[in-house]
Length: 323
Image 1 (cartoon, helix red, strand yellow):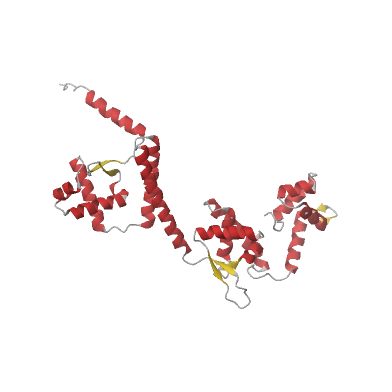
Image 2: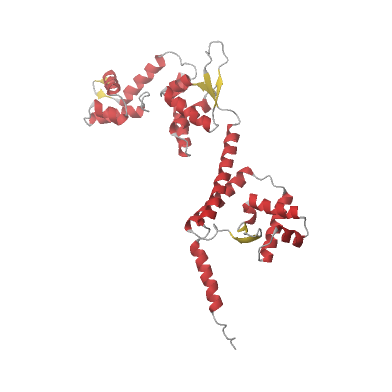
């Protein structure tokens, strides 16, 4: 990584590029390192046969083992390579889910720290990055409620801040994602009202609303009671059977329910749209409710084809019975 120690792969590239005749400045540019780093590396590890990557790596390993013991927050020397390799690989996987690279690296470091927390200085030493990079990454993770700050309690700590991953971090992240999915679904449904369900934009928003509503319901479950769900299904069946818009009073009278129960059933459908799938319950201008196919279930081309097919059947003359 730029700014960190040279890896075995870095040294192999250096050896290959030297064999091709590249200069130190060009090699440094390709690796994203200072030219002085490359010149020192080659000078320190040049052998009679030239610069040999494997030999240079072995010498660097022996040199590292002779250094002072690891500082607080760093893995033991024997475990350092495997730990860093895991942190980088795990961070790359997190970055693939949308988390920026540096916050992913900081999060992976904290996740694998033996004490479950690290200071800014410890993160800087582990990741070989600047304090500003760590600060920015921690701020991003705090905004997502994945990391929190605490204070050292030791006598010699100097009131240093430590960054902690709590045991319930996944539950908080889960709840945050659930709320976001519900908000996206609601916004998409509002967009359908603006653009119209029959427009291409409305159809795309309809599919989006259905998808995020489904995720929200699967992740969050529902606070609806089984009785409310059953009442919602009954109201849906009543609207389909009536084949015309009905008010709350109409529904209550037809079903023999109090008006509050009928209103509660309609509210259950609005809060959990999947109950009426593949239909949607809409409210008309007169305060009545009606059912229609969900706009995200059929594309505009499919609706046109079905309308044309129904029209052709109506216009087709009756055929005489065959004797």
